[in-house]
Amino acid sequence: MAATPAAEPPHPDIDRPDVDRPHVDRLELVDVLAALGHPVRLEIVRRLASGTEAFCGEVVPDLPRSSVTHHLRTLYESGVITRRPAGRRLYLALRREDLELRFPGLLALVLD
Image (cartoon, helix red, strand yellow):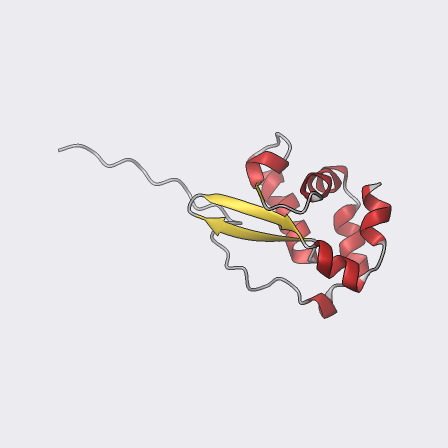
């Protein structure tokens, strides 16, 4: 009898439901600025700035998985990005409209 392959451990960002994303009225400037204040997270945001949803492997620099998880969680919990699990992939998108509504001009300053 053939052994079944071992299941990969769950990805913390994929297996968390997308329910704790702050509503636009609850976005806090200090949280958004803290999230954008790290060079890796700022680079992720710049890569998502085109406005299209992207697979996390396309926008996250080559880092250890624990670092990627930390940076994505920080961006997500601050309200800067959304994430959508699809099978084994995690798709990310910048909350451009929400951020512009709450903090007009902030993204333009950060992304230029």
